[in-house]
Every structure is written in structure tokens, then in C-alpha cells.
Length: 144
Image (cartoon, rainbow, N blue to C red):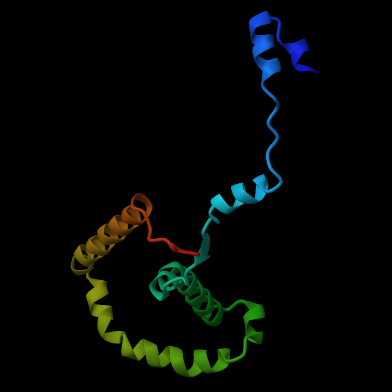
């Protein structure tokens, strides 16, 4: 399309006819690209060790409870677990005699009810805190 076809007003058509079209120079793109700064890249920082511990303790606890359950149970397939015989014959009786002093404390329900309520209340508060408040996250450093 020509300039004359686009403009319907005579005054504007004459004004645009008298002005030549400007073409950008050959180095226009290079000049514009020089003015644009490179965007900094985000480099991930190593995850702090305490965050690894905070995120892995439930899995360690669940694994420990599962192993103790499988070794101390009478399920038939648990006879194939290596070390179960040592655990059942030597370690369990030793742990039983070690904690035998706690049996009189647990036998009276009034003595155990208050610490049990404190433990349950503390657990409830920890669970509420875990779900309500933000956890620390890994931050990224800007490198250039």
C-alpha cells in the first residue's frame, strides 16, 4: 500500500508526501541489543542441613516403627528377616528388663494420665503449628 491510499485527508496526504520514509540503519539491531542488559540467572543454593533433618524425621520414625513391628511380630514371612533371632532372643529380653521399672508407673492410671495429656496437648500444638505457619524454604542467589 502506498501512502496516498491510506490517507483520505488532502492536508495529511500532502504533509506525508513531502516527508521521506525513514529506514533504520544497518546497525540498528546491534545498537538496540547493546542497550538491553542480560537478565541475571538464579543459581540454586544448597539446601541447609537442618531443612533436610526437618523434612526426613517422619520417614526415619516410620521406618523404625515398621522394622520393630516386623521383627517383633509372629508373622510367618518375618522369619526370613536376617537378625530376627538375635533380636527376639537377646535384645527384647534385655530391653524388657531395662524398662521393667516403668511397669508400676503405668499400672496406676492416675499417675500416667497427666503426662499423657501433656504429651497429647503438646503433639496437638506441634501439628497445628506445622500446618498453620510457613516452613523455611531454600532461597536462590542471583548471579551475573
